[in-house]
Amino acid sequence: MDQNLFAAIEWLQLFGSTPLEIIATVSAILGVILIARQNILGWPLGILWAAVSAWLAITEWQLVSDGILYLSYIPIQLYCWMVWIKRGSAVEQGTFVPEWMSPKRQLLLIVAVALCILSWGQGVSLLADKISWIPQPSLLWLDSVTTVLSFFAQFLQARKRMENWVGWCIVNVLGIYIYWIKDAPIYSFQYAIFLGLGIYGWVQWHRSQRLQSYATGSC
Image 1 (tube, helix red, strand yellow):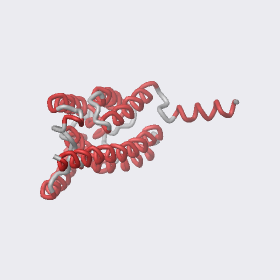
Image 2 (spheres, rainbow, N blue to C red):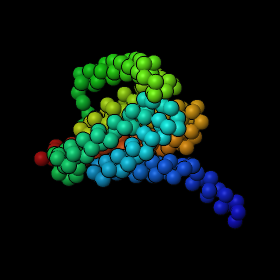
Image 3 (cartoon, one colour):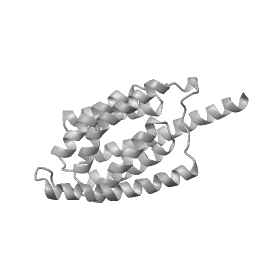
């Protein structure tokens, strides 16, 4: 009995060691699941996760880029929320369903991401040197990659582009590593969950896309 109780406590610790970590983890997991299922209620949960994560990233882990990223998520997720409200989040409507970009647009996307990563890393480094209250960034380039990819993935998700899940999977793999070496195993485990959810989201959106293709073809 005591061993079972201890095991349960250990598993609960994976959701966070503080109330803020627990709130962030639960809201993030539920939010991603809802977005994967194309449910519009995932966006307000994402806003809650972003606000809490920004506080933790800046005050606890000195991950400046991640902190800026989380703060920026708040207006971005509001934007995504508005887009889904305007265009409709229900698959049955058939007017707003997931799709892939053309190969040409995908190439342009890769180039744009690479240039933005270089610019972001240099910009954060310069700001840290010139502004005293900004701490020196840790893991500058890894942090820059996850930040920039997250920006692009978020906007792609708002437009229901399938490429967003590729970006999220890369971010999540790097996130597992970053937070592990920052001695934040709770967040490392969260990113492992997000990786699984990213794969789940891709499968769900791919299925939706395929069903829509069949429906269109049958017409």
